[in-house]
Image (tube, rainbow, N blue to C red; front, side, top):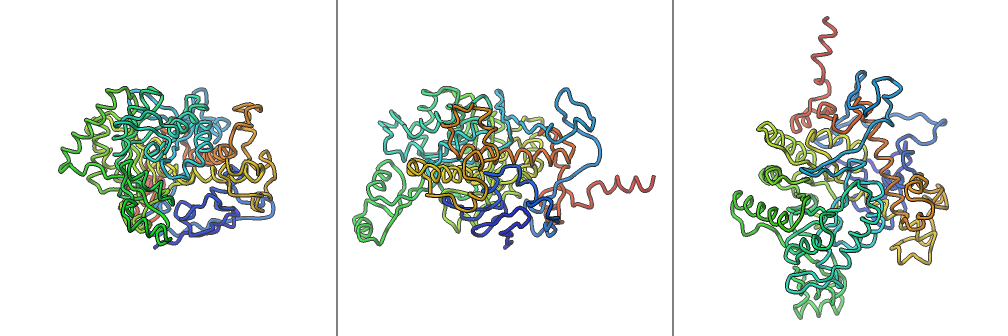
Length: 546
């Protein structure tokens, strides 16, 4: 198993636990005091693009060994002439071809286009309690920056205040809170996407949302995700709540209705219960039946008023991947998110996360291959979002290039949650009376933060950028976690601009697979990306032999 380095002396970062390929710890804690690259970037922003201690150091890359088939084994091309995709009004002059002039805006959709200021989106933030606790930061930050956020499955089903009568939602306060928080700051960029699983469909989530919010909302059908191949889970530590979830129709393990389980809980032998969602399509026996059922679902959503529909699929095998791309394209969906193994979760069986499914790079490479087959037949291919263990600006470039021209967005889960945690902790430390309301974990600033600053204006590099957008009077209503999300997004955008400028690509639509090369022959064989020294080798020899 590849072990990723836990420390980066050049950036001054360190992982608290084992490091994943994304650069995040395998177990990311909401109370973490630092300081992985994403955590530190959420305060310092684009400063983390560069080595620390300028003027006192020189630095050199340690990234020379590329083992196995992984995103780390793809490298980004640079070119020494030409420039493509310059915004209107700019020339190919050296004065105009500068990285701040690179446009990182993107768009997706079938008949109606959704614009995004940066080519990222969140993973599905659903019924896990950590999503609920930090939602104000997540949704406000996403709306201010202008990228899509996904309300994941089961939000209504686990809400004790929700009223469901005869399969029809009468009241859904938690779902309303999540939607309305995003819409409060939505300015035409990004989207709020509500996801449906089996229980959500039964509970009438789609009908409730369209009746109350109309076409402001995109609806998402869910086939799966990269972290697990069963339905979503949460853990509860209250017997009464476990019984409530059981009566709501969920699978609860162990079964809280059994007297022996209740006895074990009362004596402390059992301390928690896992709530599970159901598997979809279990009554179907063939590809044709799945396609027919899927088409009926899409047709129904359109019939009740949805103009924008997406699909989320997980790291199943090649047949399911082909089905997702083909069926979503035929149904004229607006987006297909393909989540590979290596991604994160609020709760999944750990060894399932470690051993099931198709790793992201392999799944994404085959997604391109299958999309290209449809395109060659003259079909309009659904726009893709690629996700699964992606966190940095180089990951964004690589995923967009690997899936070009079909990939429009990169789905990022835990990396876009970290600034929400961090901001809430900082805000709680500076305003201890609000600690509980903020879900903050700190009573005072740790040294890893206080050495940066002791006020939000000092701590967050992008504080005044946010203030410029919302106005100084409105800053009191902006969660620090949202400021941290803006700060992280600013660094990701600037880093992506720099990679794109180096590749002489000044707009997202110009990024192509030829902007990558494979660092080992195995990665080349599996992805279809040429090995480093094979790229432009014939052109090089023509120059020499001219």
